[in-house]
Length: 120
Image 1: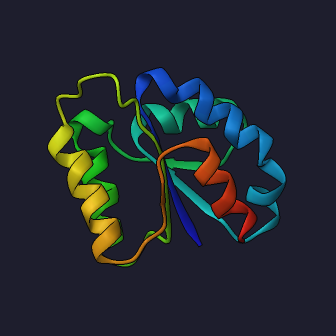
Image 2: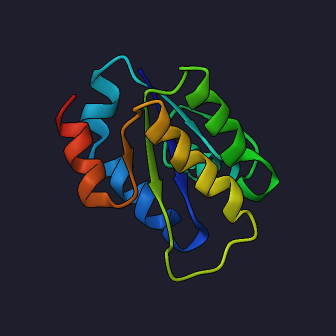
């Protein structure tokens, strides 16, 4: 199972904390993590094995969206900052739309992400 993790700048620490809190689930299953660039680097520094793609604004969100469309991504955990403006907003909406089109579970906050991981 491949899980994509993405976090806007104001949510990166929250993502790392979330990963640490759910390390038992993430390490006990056959789970591969992929991430946008900076989120992936922060997760790596926390000890997680992550394939870091491009930074979100440089195309990382689009890379993950392509993975969803190609059925290579099984779940997306995307801690969005709804109060900030993002220059790559079209890529974000494309990713969310493709998760709906391809019926890929998408969590945009820790509560939903926790429920998805517990379902594994």
